[in-house]
Amino acid sequence: MKILQSCFTTGLFVGTALWSQAALVPPQVFAAAPATADVAKTIDKQANEVSDTQWADYRTCIEYKLRSTWYPPRDGRAVTVEFVVQPDGSISRIRLNTSSGLSIFDQAAIKAVEKATPLTKLPAGSNEPIVVLCRFGGGRNSNNPLRVCLHPKKVIRLNEEGDRALSEHRYSDAVSIYYDQLGRLEGIDCIDLRKLLASFDGYVDSLKNDPNAARLQLYRELSVDSSYTPARESLNAIIMNMGSNPASFEDRLALARHAKTSGDIEVAIGEYQEALRLQYNDQAHSELFDLQRRIRLEKDIEQWDEFLKAHPDSVQGRLGRGETLQRLNRFDDAEKEYRQALSIDPTCEAARQLLQQLRAPTNGDGSQR
Image 1 (cartoon, one colour):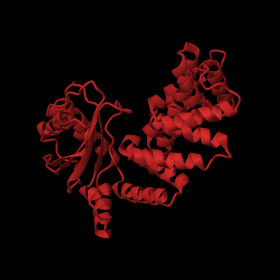
Image 2 (tube, rainbow, N blue to C red; image 1 turned 90 degrees about the vertical axis):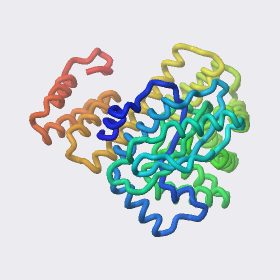
Image 3 (spheres, rainbow, N blue to C red; image 1 turned 180 degrees about the vertical axis):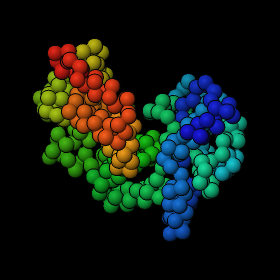
């Protein structure tokens, strides 16, 4: 929080448009050779001294500072710039990481970084420079906030493991590493898209005798790149083999509702999105929104679980998990969390009020208490 206060006091929060994607990692991550034991120790030392919250706050500082220097074009181009931030906040070693294909656009992104120097100082406890990999421009998921790599050593290891799995044609393992593990750490936009799509393609090809499993992977692949033609063609072929018309809104909506009833939530979301791509419908959109909301809340529960493992006596953690459970209509579980908060702090008025809300009459359908 002190870092965010520093951002405000130094005037870094400026309301100008920025479409970017970034990851903070130690400079050693970009070395040509694999990380040595000494490098790993340095990375671990820095990661341990700086909390996740501090890095998240610092990421926000970078995002808002760049908003004042970057003016995105409207043609959807994207460029990635890499630069080093010293402990005192000064920027050095600015270079192009991935070109947009247009020199003027690339140089504009580099100049935006040059104009942003200096940034606020690195979080207390971070005595080594960090590398920022910032993606400017349009393209897939360009509205996402900047991403911070909170586990640098793990990212190095996972990238190496993913590359090894892909080269050895262990496509299921490669998808698990790139999509599930690295995706959670860095965000999908910070992963090499070509490697990820190649992993999905190989995995789907190995699932020829299991069309339902293949369909799930294809929806995940399209969530990464909705314009990827091979995935859409493969998905359409599976839908046709199921006796449905992939170009029919009614058929796709029926498939979505069937998957929802069966508990195949990811497949249901994919089918709702495909149906709405063919034809907009208020009811279908509402059903999709409810599913996506449920998934977001379930992910929030997972994050609260991780937080409470480290801070089991956190009143705010108990209240936050309880409120999320309440939104999922898991009222009994929510009540346990509120009571746990009260056992930690008997004077907690917020916990008492939330318990009173739970005891309030429902609307008849059990959706509110």
